[in-house]
Image (cartoon, rainbow, N blue to C red; front, side, top):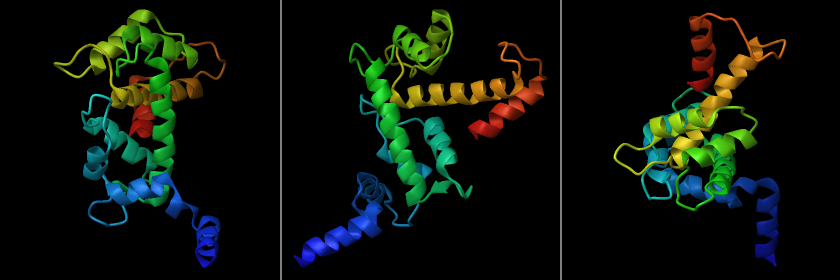
Length: 186
């Protein structure tokens, strides 16, 4: 009876302590600092082929969820990252139609089209070629899928901010474009 009361009190007042995100945070925080750094995150995330996530994607995610700009994320940032990862993993599995563990050019094209991007199949193939792990079979793993889609979202947001008439055309300097995209990606 007392244990049930304690459990209910914890659920009401401290839901993070019982969440899968909190449990994963405790596992990933190997130095017990109360924060997750790039090294710890990279060690914790794996693709379907058991390869570690690449540095660029891990750094991008740290930067997205590090509200203090310290290069590490706390439990609350990590909880948001946990949800972010769950959504992207589900999308990846949805579009990996052949269950190969990687996204092909055709699968990426279909995914991007369903996300609202009107891009050519050739562009999707170019992305897959650019983001395929060197020496591996063609296709992008989960980490690169997240990186591609997140960067595309960031660049699209910069474009939309400048495309006030919604014509699909903007006029801006190269430096304005770079400034807008870099501020979102880093």
